[in-house]
Length: 543
Image (cartoon, rainbow, N blue to C red):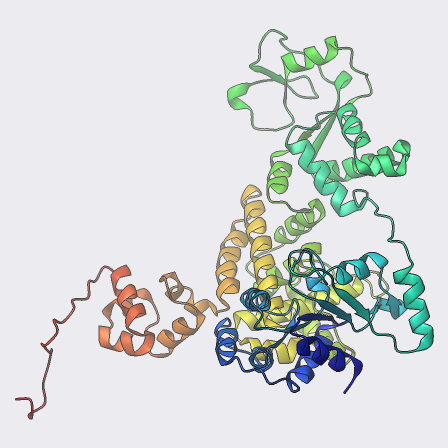
């Protein structure tokens, strides 16, 4: 019996609860499983509820159900949200006594844990190997113990593997100070997204108001170097203009046509355009420009406006870089491309990260799949020496996962082949649906009709995890991937054939409640047979 198990059993013996923080999901599951073998609790109802949370229980679900039956649970991002909610609720009720988890429970959760046990204060940090976690992260985990609404005090215990580790933990975490908090506004994806949003909403209208706004941010207060910040913002503006999301005009480059009329518009060439025929967003009101000039604006001041495309991107909460990537890819989409093309397009975005990482044993397989589908790519393969090459290859693996999902492979198969858990699958599906919706909206603005058609079908396929042949059946409420496949396999390949189907047959396939719902959706009313009467033949004995 190791130290963690001893501490856990001691916690249970004094009728208290504990959270055990582990460095990985696999460690959380193994730790919970080992502890569950040492307890005498029996909660068969919890076991059933955990399994019911998943439409098709996976090996992970069954593993969790065995643990929670004994009052022990594991908790990490790979679980379904329903399962996580159930674990947290039962922990508050006291049925679940111990939760073994990754730091997913370290922030913002108030649970009745008397004791927090931290298995390791080191994490894998990429090429640098195992490294100590930040003091702030330690404080967040330790802070889950002894919450004032549940306990008068609590205990946070860190496990040290050696005397030197013990000293390091004491100096670094017990005596150490939390790290400084730094603004992330200067990070390019964040800055370009917010800059476009501020311009689109009209909060920033020119270069002066842009500088004035950012001068008041925590970013400017912290770094106190506005010249450097202005250079970064100018770089972002140039990119946004180059991508066609904003227009930048100097005030002294514009001629006034009619300063007394709000209906006259001008562009940089001085051409007048009637308001009724205004079709471009970089036209401006003449009177507004006259007011600007009378206010003696700086001649070098730049007027900032979002284009129609830029405004829609801002409304979709997309990173402008992602939007440009999607537009470039969809511009190359044609009848020779396929679902693989669109899937890889959305997989190679910042929004879908973290992507599924390629293991060393998978490299040959992924390379073979890339070669097989090379002509379907909507972007060029980067150089092997490019820093982004690994992420590009990860996007291929993630694409293959989505392909298997829409070809109706179940969660157990996906877990085995791609090491992706049910909770992660749900998150990936939701993000993919959002990216495809955004792609469809951008494709409409650019009149990419072929792409719009395929994206609409792909959204439904990803949402339900089905082949294209089931799309018609999915229009029926209450029919998902399993019921649709069952209908299709029994010869009901479209709504017309379902409408002709005998009610008894549908009941056998779908269950009475769903069969009645389907028939009502198709405009048929099911008449109830009065009690005591029977439709059809009766037994000769009853006669």
